[in-house]
Image (cartoon, rainbow, N blue to C red; front, side, top):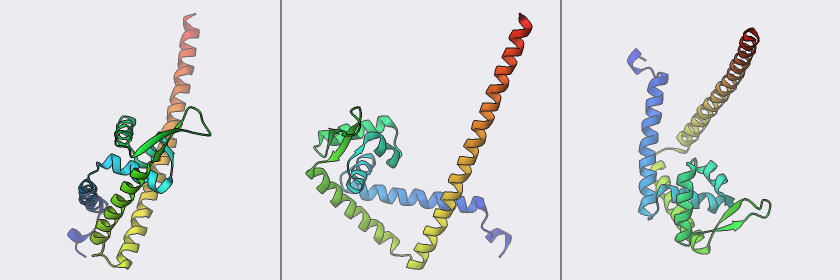
Length: 177
């Protein structure tokens, strides 16, 4: 393998990013062809497969900002696809639930979307799909662990800095009095 053929981390990252972008655009096209926006589809899909959820739970699953999530829920409710119900376990929380119309639409859109993705992925052998799945999952888990370690280091560094500032302020205040 020549030096120019070597797969560096940067080269691999670029391929992953470009692949992700192309796949995202194709998936978005599949969803919009069904007459839904991405946020609406993600919300309906989460409710279809997970059952009734709070807005916060959906937001965490589909990784949306709260403003986008609220707008999507309002839109879906107005279309008669979801209803808000009181949560039996928490009076403050509201559960979102698919209406029969919402369940039917979500199921048909998800089925069409899944078929579109299957058609795209049919170019890969089962072995290639399994290998890609395992490799990307491993990479994602490594990245997640690295992020968690960095957050932990940042929090402990931040705590040490806060302690030093407190001690410095106490020392400075003591010297002024």
